Figure 1 (cartoon, rainbow, N blue to C red):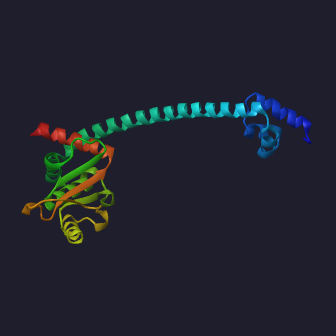
Figure 2 (figure 1 turned 120 degrees about the vertical axis):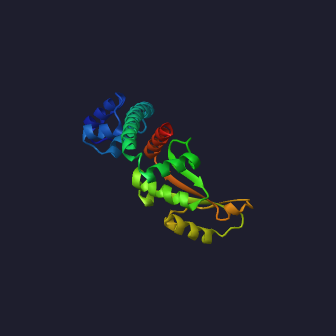
Length: 218
């Protein structure tokens, strides 16, 4: 038996109009559990719940669409700013040996296709040492954000080669990912092939702009 018939009738009317249990509880000054208890056996209440869920889903989809659109606009704006910044910086950096060396190394052995990360793959430690310094000086990458992994000949010592590469490229062992192995008998690959990685869409955009501008200068 319902103690407060007036609030009960009000709750029923509000539910029929599509109000949620939370809204009814607040409007009628009752607990949500009381509202749920009053309405749980009402067939129309279950239908309202379905309608509210469907409406909430549609509203969420609309909200996510707006958010994605805003993010897309913001992303395009950041790309354009990165390009403008890269073009201006190139004019100031192009006569610096380290800047040119870093770009030439990447032009020869870097990944020019993917848009979301910088990856240099080469078996000469000196090239990685120069490129890591380039990333720090001109891209502004902290060494903690630069990762490294090795492609080693089958049977190679992971620990020994990791220590050797770490010493050569001046990058902490903690920056090294799990190495991969490949069959190889060439002497030039006895220490493996190193891969310097930096995950950054904007940094990659800037690097690609610089590479293209350098090619035009040559």
